[in-house]
Length: 470
Ligand code: PMP
Image (cartoon, rainbow, N blue to C red):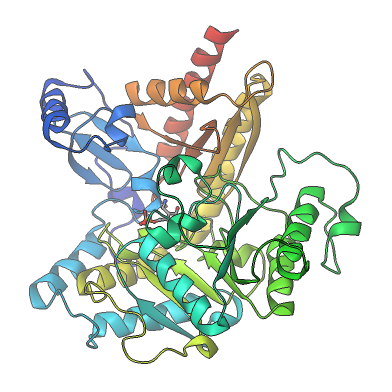
């Protein structure tokens, strides 16, 4: 028997309905926000609505407009907004005990057991889980400490295009200069090397010579990236102290939904092994079913030393971050990694129930199938739209890259498409090093009907916006 309602029954509607937007009630709240909230507020600048309620893959604003949500709180609401099966458990837990630091509760131990069961590769069954602060950035901070503690080194290696968070350690790993400007220096000896970018890498035919992997997949960008990583570890004049670990998104999210070639993660695994460094895979955006597997690492058949999680881990958007690592690295003593909010029991029940809901409704297969459908629909539009230079992703993690007529990244097109979609009831977000990638990360509970409607709106938006440019 399936747990909770079917995915068809989770939403306000299968289609959006928008009247005037932003409506008068949204306007009022947006104005009040403008007066008192921080000038760091960003999302309503592009999508000016004030939220009232949300269900499944639909959100309703304070004027009664209903939208289809194709970004799920940036990859948080994998089982949809307010999933009743998840809510029931989190509410019961909230009423019994909510704040538990690291005392054992059934919620905590059951979630750890489940994560150990679904962990990628050889981490399944032989891993430990540590909770710290509630965000993804906190999980990354924990991973930096774990790598330093286990290797006795302090250098860090990450990739161009990466996003790992905004606390000082995580921000050191994040590549986006706009997030770092004014805050340097951050952690010493942090280096960034190229991440393979199949849509952009020129083919120079020297892949085999550069790639350290035995079964090179002959992608030049991948080979050059692996060569750069290897040199940071092994070249005597590499310029930095040998890194404690390699931090990598298995599919880059903020960087533009970039799927690396098949051998990339294995190449990193080999370099980490050869140099006694840790391979830390950041699954904060890609984890818990997003890409049609529990973790994006599963697509690459590699066992990392540790994975970081947050976002969808709280089930209904309750904050919780965690790191799962191989038990051989469990070398710190009591208090080795702490945080007041490391025992948010309702979030733990939320995470467990979200995983159960995904299992029970076969949402990994659904994400795979629906993701292909979305990519097919966009690829049809791309046939007559030269501005679309790449359609990519795995499962319900979809990126569409845009360039202008001169071949330059075009963020304005993406913004205009986003606005057009919003005006027609579909919420989409962007990504990419130049903001020129449209990113679709809908809840995994999105139905076929909703997907079809969303793609109709997106197709029209692309046609309308590019027609203006032609
Ligand atoms: N890593 C990745 C891959 C992310 O996508 C994000 C958030 N976008 C983070 C880390 C940071 O998570 P948080 O915002 O919860 O600190």
